[in-house]
Structures are given as structure tokens and as C-alpha cells.
Length: 623
Image 1 (cartoon, rainbow, N blue to C red):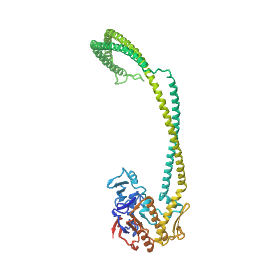
Image 2 (image 1 turned 120 degrees about the horizontal axis):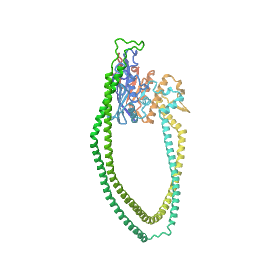
Image 3 (image 1 turned 30 degrees about the horizontal axis):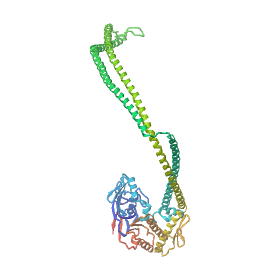
Image 4 (image 1 turned 90 degrees about the vertical axis):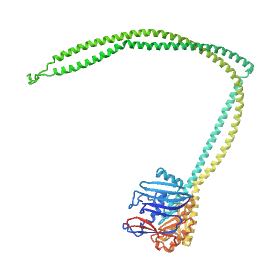
């Protein structure tokens, strides 16, 4: 994957408010800082030099080169609105990534001008990983950004940890596991295929056994036809005779069906008479008892009203009778209290009760009269309906008898047809047995040929399985070492090449000693070297790692950021490192960040200053 970065925009990112920087074809660009913010109490530190290029890592991975993903908003502007926009091409496709920290984390992805963003940051990140696989912050640090002391600090790890780091960084573990997975997947496929073939062989042999039994049964059945008369004339004569019987019986059946149809019409008329009589009778009864029902309704309503009136009067009398004018304790009359006289109310109550009795008797007489009319009408109606019902039952019995007779005749026809079918099947079965015997013998021959073919396949699969198993054993035991040795050899060649340019000697060694990766220069271990020597070797190793990552993962970049790698290095060392970087032909933009840019005698194409104001806002100025 060839990455060509063209532009980055920062909005409220770290100390910047709104900043845009071209990244493509910038040659050697020297970056220095000036910090006027009194809160920082610094001249160059904290001006925002590294923040520009941390924006690249943030846009691609969601974190800075130092692995930071929080506290990146500019607190002096609008921390509720912070984003970075990065424009670049990958293998010819133009990408624009716009990653938001606030108001909420989000990622927008445009490819060749089309929006490919997901519904949220997780979905967008997942989609981005399919377009740009393996593009992690570690890889960005290794391919694009060389920080002070170098990102990932390979040399900071103990020799025993360097092997593991190198395997992870070059994805050799992934490649080994991928090979093992593919081999084991192939092994499982072969085992599955072997099981299928063995199951198929077993199934074929089982089928052969079944067909052999069938063949034996067919031949036994054929023996029962030794005395069979295959004369077509005899069979046809018997069939024609039986068909004549069927035609005669069928005519009788059709006659009975016609009689049944006429009877059904008669039944339909009687059922209609029955329904009409029942309906007319109900209407007549309603006309007779209607006035009585209305009288009963009126009397019932009057009785209910009278009962309610009696109940109210009884409660009133009870309440008045409960009043006393004599003290229950001393027996003396209570002053100003007179016991009410309820005689008139009681007389009225008696009158109402007498009236209720009269109404109740009248209501009873009306109900009795209604019941008498209803009962007499029902007797008259039921008598007429019973006559019609008896006629219906008689006709239904006739129809049932006709149907039963037809069923018997149809059964007789069925038996005759069965006899005809038996005669036809007898000859067909004989011919079918002959055909079955021939086809079964052919099937058995084909199955035996298939068994021989599958047996050959099984031998081939077992042979392939042995080869795959040997390859799996090789991958588990030896390939890891072989792959890592190849990586070490490649790194050692690149390191010696770069060492010759920087130190004028190839006595810089990168060696694998069992499970440890040792680094030595002129016979001394890395840990025993001076600070300047370590700093130069760090850069050499990082560039060599960049080369192998570009080779292993096929990722290249037009951009290289050197973040304060020259600090504490003498002028000769700086020039050597700059010459080394200049020899990298795949880079067209090198940004060199330094606190002491004015002291570096670098042939540069551009100079820019990151200036932080007293209010804490950084800006980029080309000088």
C-alpha cells in the first residue's frame, strides 16, 4: 500500500484553533517553535510542533503517536468542537478522514469523493480497517514518525523481549499462525474428505449388499410365474367379460341415483313446509298473547312501584316509633319531647298492602291465562309438525336404502375392477421382474466400479494427509525460527548499510541469540554505549525496521517526520543522519522538528515556525 499524504487540517486540536498544512512534495522542511504563552514558561517546548503530526496519527488511528486519545482539545478556544481532517491517497484512491473528538467521538470517511462513513465511529473504524488494514499507531510511528528516542523504543526493551516485539511488529507470528491455520484447515478438509470417502465406500458396500438381496428376491419371485399363462387372448377375453358386468351394474346405480334425486326434491319441499308452519305458528302465538304480555308488564311495573312505596313508609313508621319521651334511666317524662302519633301512617300502610295483594292476584291470573294460551297453541302446532316430520323420516329412510343399495353395487364394481387390475398387473409384474433383475445386475456392477474408484481416492487422500502433517510439524517447530532468522538477516544487512553511512563502519550487529536479540557496536553491547552512539543507533534501527515493514506489509509513505531526533547530537552526527535520510528515495517530504533548529546546518527546502501566542493559541508561519 503506497500512502501519499497531501494535507492536514486541525481544528481546536491541542494548542491550535484552525490550521492547515500541505504535506506533499515539501522536501526538507525545518520546523521550530516559539512559545510566548507565560503559563508554559518555555521558549520552544509546548509550542505545538509535534501536535501537527500527532494529528496524522490521530486521524488514522484515533490516538496520538504517544498513545493518547483524551485531553487533546484546545481549552483556550472551544473544547466542545475538536477535529482533525487528513487528505491522502492509498494506491491511487483518494481518502479524506475527518475524525472528531468533540462534540462526540466520530469518524467520517470519503473515498474518491464518495461518503463511505458508517452510522457511528465503531462502524466507520471497522470499515476503514477493511480499506487500510494494519494501519495502527505502532505502524504509523514506524513508517511515518520518528520521535525523540524513537517511538516504540525498540532498544529500550530487554534483549529477551526484543524477539517478541520484532515478531509482533513484523507480523511474523501472524504469518506463522496464518500458515498453520491454512495447513490445519487443509488437514481438516482432507480429514473431512477422507471421512466422506470412507463413509461413501461403506455406503456403497451397504448398497451392494441391499441390491444383492433385492436381486435374490426378484429371482425367487420369478420362480412363482413358471406356470403363468402369458396368453394375451385369454387375458383380454376375461377382462371384456368383467367390463360388461361393470356396465350393467353401473346402469342400475344410475337409476337409483335419479330416484334419490327426486326424493331429495320432495324432502326439500317438506322441510320448507315445516319451516313455514313453524314460523306462521310463532307469529300467530305472538298475536294472541301480545296484549296479555303488555298487561303483565304494566301490572308488574305497578306492583314494583307499590312495593317501593310500602318499603319507604315502613322505614318512616319505624323511625317515628323509635322516638320516646320517657327517660329510660329515671322513668320521668323528658321535657319538650313529644312522642309522634303514627296511626295515620300505619292506616295508609295497611291500605297500600291491601292494594298490593289485589294487584298480585291480578298479575297471577294474567300469567295463568298467558300460559294456557301458549300451551294450547304448542299442542296444536306440534301435532301438525309431527305429521310433516313423519313424512320426512319416511322419505329419508327410502333415500338411505337407495344409497346403501348403491354402495353395495359400487363395492361390487370395485371388486370386479380389482380383478381386472389384478389380471393386468399379473403380466406387468412378470415383465417388471425381468426388467428389475437386469437393472439390478447393472447397478451392482456400477457400484462395484465406484467402490474401486473411492478406494483409490482414499489412498491418495491419506498420502496427502501425511504430507500436510509433516508441513504442520515443520511450521510449528522450525518455520518460526527460519522466518525470524530471515528477518534478522535482512535487518542486519540494512543496519550495516546504514551504519557504514553514519559511523563509516559495519561493526553494528543485530543478532539472534536463542530467544534474545542482541545489539552491539564495535564489540560493545548497546546498553554500554554512550548517549550519542545510542541515539544514532536508535535512528539506524528504526529506519531498518521501517524498511522491513515496508517490505513485509508492503506499506510505503511519502512522508517522514523527525521529531527532535537531533537534540543532544553533535553537528557531524546530525549531518550523517540527514545524509542517511536523504538517501531514502521513497520520501518526498521530510519534516525535521527541533528545539535547536537554528543550530542545525541543514540544507533545507522550507522553514516553518510554530508560534504559540500569549493566549495559548498556536499558528504555523513559513519563514
